[in-house]
Image 1 (tube, protein in one colour):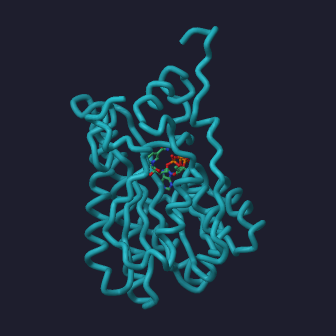
Image 2 (image 1 turned 30 degrees about the horizontal axis):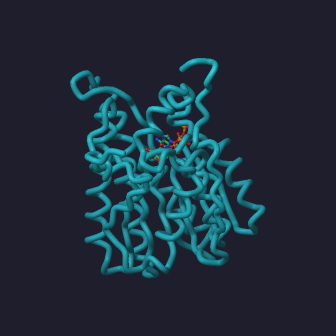
Amino acid sequence: MSEATPYISKTERFRPKITPTPDRLRGKVAAITGGARGIGRAIALRFAQEGANVLVTDKDLEPARETAAALEQFGAASKALRVDVTDREQVDEMIRTAASNFGGLDILVNNAGIIVFGSLMECAREDWDRMMAVDLTGAFQCTQAAGRFMAEQGRGGRLLHIGSTASLLPTAQQAAYCVAKAGLLMLSRTAAMELVRFGITSNLICPEGAVTDINRNLLSDPAVMSALESRIPAGRMARVEEIAALAAFVASDEAAYMTGAELVHDGGAVISALWWR
Ligand code: NDP
């Protein structure tokens, strides 16, 4: 990329007007994994803006505390808790804390995730295991713990899983990530089938991309960012607030009839494979 013509990312320039729906989640209790940063943090903020009480969990307590503190301005109750989703005891503690601090649990967002880049043929066994442990087994543990609790609690519930367009399509150099995120799709559908009779829904949100800590280094290279944006028909990545807006709808009573769905949030990327401008 020549210095004379610096690439100005359309993603950075785009500032959508986003207006939360007041009181839509009033009285609901939400637990968010990996809620300290990025997409999880945006969802925590949005839920609090709509009136939910939010348990912000993350594997590091301090950033989770900062996010929980940022929610106080919206008047909702919030609490930070250290939860590494790979640790079943900590996952169970998340459910107990929601019950003891907020009187129950209505919404779980399986958001915690990592990405290990690389091809299938070169993927080291330890990288494979790490990907599965966080992105798939971690989500299984949270889904099972929350699903059992919500069923017993008897007031319905919402399970939201943050998948990816990589849940649907093989993505270059993201082999283990794709397999884990595709597994999350079937986890979501299976939970949807088992839990619908309790009024509990389970849905997968599939973002194409938003700039967060997970990819900031990679996308700080203008050549990479420009290549990515040119591949997306909308010409840009999403903003985390846009993903959070979709999550708030899926978490609300308005989405009671939608379960087992994949909500593709991608600026047209997935359907554009055979399309040219
Ligand atoms: P971030 O890295 O900004 O946030 C992920 C959060 O999860 C971090 O706070 C991270 O903590 C935490 N986390 C990592 N491992 C664990 C664990 N074992 N237990 C609990 N928390 C953990 O990434 P994003 O916000 O971008 O990602 C959120 C979700 O969205 C992920 O599932 C990701 O795969 C998905 N996604 C993201 C896309 C994007 O373009 N950003 C596109 C499609 C999907 P720490 O920082 O300490 O590691």
